[in-house]
Image 1 (cartoon, rainbow, N blue to C red):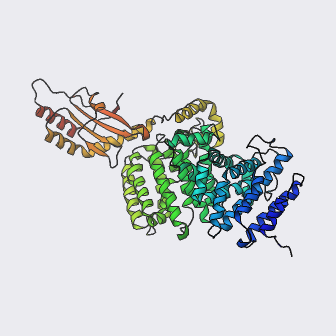
Image 2 (image 1 turned 90 degrees about the vertical axis):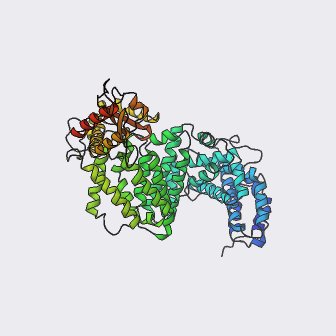
Image 3 (image 1 turned 180 degrees about the horizontal axis):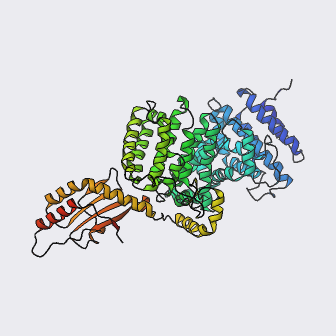
Length: 608
């Protein structure tokens, strides 16, 4: 029966290695050391001596990362493999000696040899850069093994503050973390091998390392700028950095669908947390232009597709909280485009299915309530949004969404939400609520997809999109450029017309109260407006300066429409009544009140 030699015996063998010792023999001895560390009695070795014997193999003596030998040379491959085995041995030492009486001795030596360890990590990472066919995934210098070993050691370092501080204080260490984070989404060979190596488990990821070593740093004066500068050392193209961050979330979404373990949701939580940090940098507009809102919406749909489980309830509720807060900030950052798309992707149905987790955690319920009762209803004055909401509610009714399965707090929110939707739907005609037709002029089919570049134009099929491309390309490219500059599109004519109709409808219902308040105030000029940028909408007899400056008489009504991050758009109707030279304020007010009370509310027009 094969017996693994004791650690001290292998250390003695390594001490006898000479420049003439074949590489194969060196690698064999190093592998024996890894096995010995894992199984030998702790009392049979001194960890500092074991670490000391590994130092020559972390990187060739006298070399610096990047200036030793060509990456593809035989010597480089042998040295890289040696570094990989040495890194694996260090991880074994941490795993075995942690929480034992031998740990202080091992920790002291690990701190002291950090420069060599860093060199070993950087040298070993060269295995990820090779262009030749990769070794099988079980080989120590294969992409999957290399990535997993480096991630494992750096993850272990996060559990020991004195070791983690070494990484955070070393630019090369921080750079390595950011490179690994980018590399795992950009290298197809690595992705393929990791999928084969971990078919039923979450793959190793640098997402948690990015959060711990970059985002958690307290020594940065301008954290956003410093973070972006660090990431740019790995990916000079800032748009590429944004795409990497979103790809991490997309991969987490796939893992949530595919895997049944809690780790997939943990990784989703980490990546959503990272996305929030990325938004604190100059990547903000790039993330939005790459449709971060749609990607986050798809993550929510994936999370609530799983059954409620107590083991994963806390972290799932945490993800839902992050997503609801994210949507509050950014779902209308591009006018109505992202909100329309999120609704098409199933946002409302996903929020409905989220009720078990919302009932489980108050912070999730609070974020959900704010999204549903404060933020989203402000935009139900637009027909494109109301059309999507109506489709969702038709699906709810078919599913029996008002059933007792909903917990009480969620049911109250949904009832209030539903009541407001029904009130707005009364203003719309059945024709207006129909699905938009395909944008290809020669097609009469209903649309079922959006242009994936501008996200504004709709088609019924890929074929119609291709046929319409020549006429669409100019506006599509202009929209993409405007989005990267943070310029939301103007509201569509149909949305504005419908919103102004809503304003006329609401003003008709409250004009008696407005006339009473005018009469009680007794002063000119007379102004009254409905502000839809807040919910519930606010009726006021005060007017902002932009309205007063446009008034040509002593009486006007106005409305303010929400336009996402662009603020408000003002529309006004000047009533054309001016106090005569011999009239009093009271007489003029009486004339205005009589006119408003006797006639339908006039149309609103944009304020230039």
